[in-house]
Every structure is written in C-alpha cells, then in structure tokens.
Image 1 (cartoon, rainbow, N blue to C red):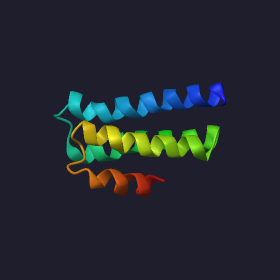
Image 2: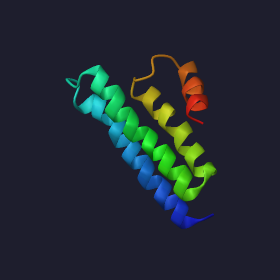
Image 3: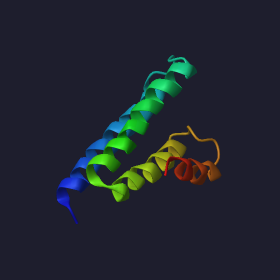
Image 4: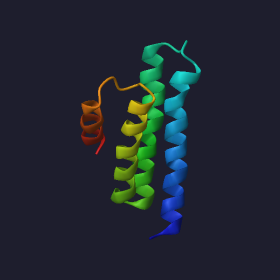
Length: 89
C-alpha cells in the first residue's frame, strides 16, 4: 500500500466532504450555485485523485462521496448511491 497515495486521497476526500457539507452549513445558498460550485469542487477531487494517484484512488472517492451524501440527506433514496457511484466512475 502506497502511504503517499493513501494520504493524498484522504486529503482530497476531506476536501470533497467539506464541500458537500457546505449545503448543510449554508442552506441559503441558491440551488443553482450549490450544484455548479460544490459539484465542481467535488468532481475536481475525483479528477485530481485519479490523475495524481491512479484510477483505484479516484474510484475510491467516487464511491465514498455518494454514501456520505446519502447519510447527510442529500440523496433522497438509497438506490441513488449506486446510480451516482456508477455515474462518477
């Protein structure tokens, strides 16, 4: 296991999860801004993880973030975890 890649991916995961949590911390953000800004930040973490550390780590982020989004109430039903994970993979 590559510690540098794992640590870097964990940092990118933290950035993605903080970005997702902004919707909960600032509920007054308009939905259009939320989708474009927060979605872009989260997607950028996928791209950076894949580019810097490899596909395995990019996929790890692509599957963890929808699970957390469901737990935060951003995905209304559990099957959307699978759809979102497949869509970002």
